[in-house]
Length: 133
Image (cartoon, rainbow, N blue to C red; front, side, top):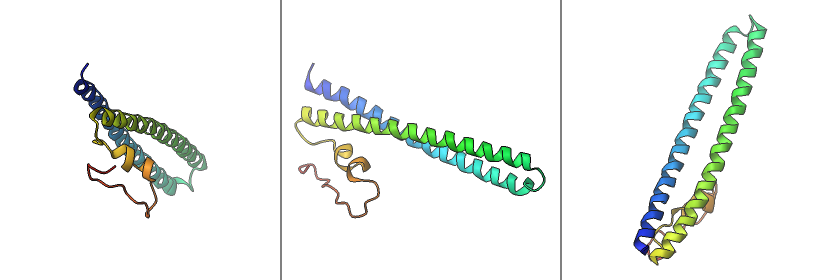
């Protein structure tokens, strides 16, 4: 198999995994929206009926706690899967760059939040020029 064919196959896997990351982030956004709507609905019902029926309020609190557990579990699963995918993307970048003989793919290796940190306002970003790292 020629180098060009190997690079093409690896790039296809790279594109597929990048799409998977985007889909997982979209799923997280949808989960957040659903949970926020659930909180708003529960609080609205509680503020309306809490003085009349304490059993109903207890049920809604338990339902909200269950929803929070499911939400946290789903977020954790997505986060772990995204970390695994990003690790594989860094491996693919290294393989493709080695086969190409140049530093063509850099995002996951040099720029992603897993490498540079997520909440550091003083971080120094690497160069974006092709001839640099």
